[in-house]
Amino acid sequence: MRTHFSHAISKPGRWAAALLCLALSGAAAWAQASTPPTNSTTMAPAQALPIKPLAAEQIAPIGATPGMADAQPSSIAPDYKITPNDLLEVEVFGVTELKRTVRVNSTGHVSLPLIGMVQVAGLTPADAEALLAVQYGSKYLQDPQISIFIKEFTTQRITLDGALVKPGIYPLTGQITLLRALALAGGGSQLADMEQVMLFRITPQGQSLLEKHDVLKIRKGEAPDPLLQGDDVVVVNRNGARATLRDSLFRDILDTLNPFSSTYRNAVTN
Image (cartoon, rainbow, N blue to C red; front, side, top):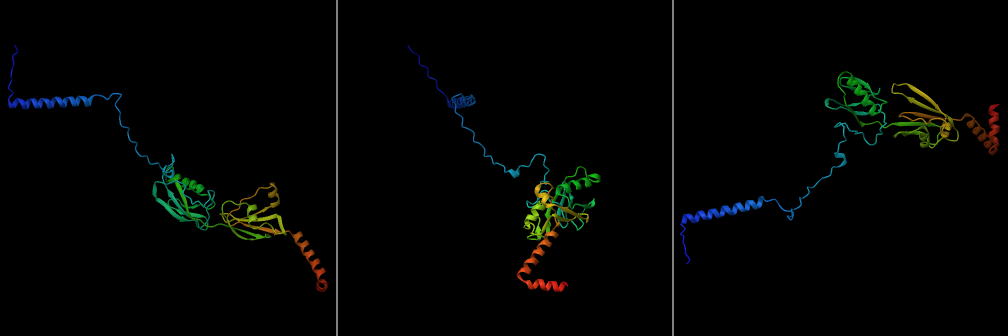
């Protein structure tokens, strides 16, 4: 015989049962979420962040001082020597009060704060930077970093004169030797004395120098080929014996073509 029990649940009891069911379902969901994923779980791959490459000029070399990079115009050779009338921008790194834009005067000097007049003509920009670093470092600054930027430079010229095919004034661009300069002028003429080529030069101190060069020995490699500088003057003399021989031959030919010229010349001479 089965016994049946009937339990009447009041309204507040039904609300309590509903809340209990919600609590149990939330706990089950939390437990499932906190369970570590198994090997079969597939994880979405992480998206790579876009990387923007840097240009070469954006990467500063290690140990380089900001603002002190070589900024010389490409038309100026590294061994360019400062000349009068050049316009220089002189900067002392970290000391903006000492920055100056100065023009080299006719004697090759520039005037700078604290150190006064300094001769820079005849020096390359690197040599001038080293000189100014010594000047400032001896009394005023500790390990100064100097930068010289040539804003304007005088066009240098050389003069090629004498017994040349195309004598004249030529621009001096970069390094040029005596042989190359003579080649620009077309080489020596038929009367050129290439064993006695004169080179005149004015030093930054205003002194005049004279050098004699045997171009024939230079061509054979028996003598050095000198480098020319701005405002150098090269003079190729005429060969006296060759000129005399040419004049004599010219007179003989003229007398042969015109006998009266010889008679007239002898009459004038006598």
